[in-house]
Image (tube, rainbow, N blue to C red; front, side, top):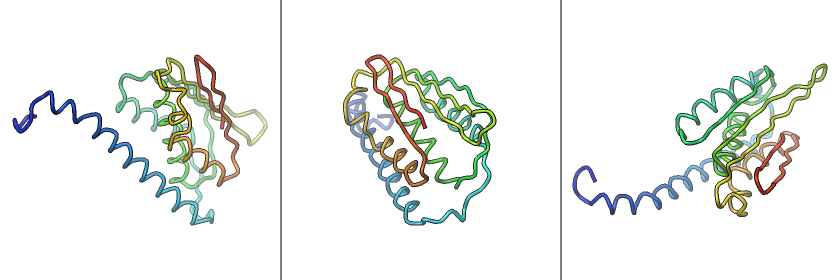
Length: 169
């Protein structure tokens, strides 16, 4: 449009299909990465990672990319022994899944005192019109998150309600 090879109307008309193609490419990369991670099978690349810092960084990055979304966090300091790529991919998938469902995201990381167990809670409100459609509830992002959790023996649950959608990891 800037070079006057096509008009602004045609450029807007092309924007939606190009965005869908971009998202399909990102999904294909995630699935390919998941396949690679599942074939490795060993935990030799594990490190002590600050889960709360990784989540805060992911939220900051996503907030810059999606300024229309409201993303609130309550993060307790939690260190985990994990593979950095796998953990980052899981966090990205969780946030991408949530932002694909609604505009208002609340992410909480809690740790039960006296135990080595923690939970991530995600609540999505101000749902998009199509949020309850199966292709959004069971999107590639959800599949990647669920599969990564399954590989590491982590439980993932979700509850779909008319006004909000929640996930607990």
